[in-house]
Image (cartoon, rainbow, N blue to C red):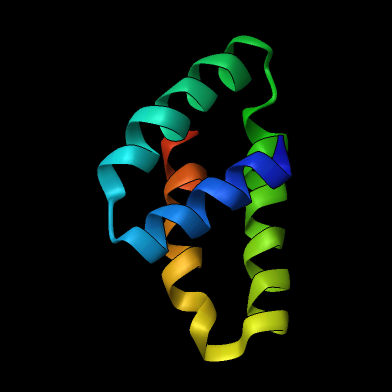
Length: 77
């Protein structure tokens, strides 16, 4: 699932289309992950993924990390 989310985050960033990411990934993932009781695991995973993306992409990571941060934040809803 991690690579799918990263792929959609990159696609949303490149297409400048937050709506696609929100509709196709964010709310679906929140529903599934929270129903299974893994919200804390998802928050930890996507927080660490932001660090890894920053290490690889440097300053260019900000655009993708915006979408990964949205996943972290939606897990608290």
